[in-house]
Amino acid sequence: MTPQLVVRAVPPFSLAGDAAGLMQDSEGLLDGAELHRARAMEPAAGHRFLASRLAQRRFAADLLGVAETSLDACYSCPQCGAGADLSHGRPGYSYRGTRLPLALSLSRAAGWTLLAAVPDAGPDVRLGVDIEDPAHTGFSGFAVLALTTAEHRDIRSVQPEGRLAAQAKLWARKEAWLKMTGEGLRTAPSSLDVRGLPGLRDLTPAETGLPAQLAAAVALSVTPGRIQAAPERGISLPEAAAEAPHTATGAATLRCRWRWHGPRP
Ligand SMILES: CC(C)(COP(=O)(O)OP(=O)(O)OC[C@H]1O[C@@H](n2cnc3c(N)ncnc32)[C@H](O)[C@@H]1OP(=O)(O)O)[C@@H](O)C(=O)NCCC(=O)NCCS
Image (cartoon, rainbow, N blue to C red):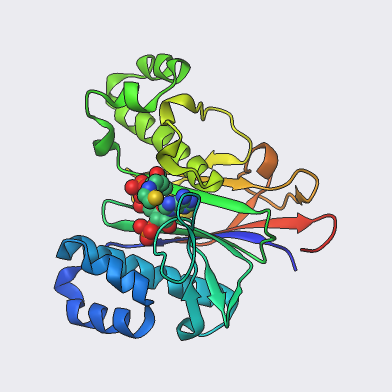
């Protein structure tokens, strides 16, 4: 079977919709640690969190072909470890005590959630996805906080009307990369130049189904020599994800096909 990258954009959860239904679904489907984390949030943030964790669980269940009730959330954090009581860090699921071979990543911005996965992922496949609202990059310390000297120089050459979008693009790439490595913002984003990293690329609205103003990026790590891209058609992922094309199968779903060369995981 050919591993593929799948992306799904989930529209904002509307409180006017069905908050009671959301709570009922959450209590029926999510794990104790997830519900506990939501309870510690202010209500609107808690609802967004629950809605996106439900969407992530359904996404994973769809891809794995199992019932969403049969999955257990299985998070890992480089600082805190892993376990059933952990509700933050790198997402994943287990089934009857066995961690499932599904590389997963999630990001939220402007109410939207972007989910990405590589089904049939070996343990060496790492994935990171991020979306960013340009309006959130307009604060005065952004360049110092977020950009390398060379990136800052590039941004200064962008016309003022395009600057926030360009900043959001770089920020989305940085967070996608740092989720892929698992480090998150423990690594200073200003120390990471994301203008040409292998396996990292922007995602277009046509690929994701996200609103055009949101920036989005994906980072995929593979051990060199284990996966090679098998061109089909369309846009490519750079280098490590090199020339891997995708087939857009719907407004909100992107599938990238990968061909395994070498031993199966
Ligand atoms: C990863 C990180 C950059 C994402 O932050 P963000 O832009 O605010 O949020 P996004 O909506 O884009 O992404 C959130 C998702 O990132 C993922 N994520 C969080 N930490 C991650 C890690 N170490 N590796 C991979 N993915 C991670 C989770 O799926 C999370 O979803 P959740 O809120 O449902 O748990 C940020 O959470 C971070 O730096 N985390 C590391 C530090 C940390 O978490 N410290 C506290 C615990 S020790």
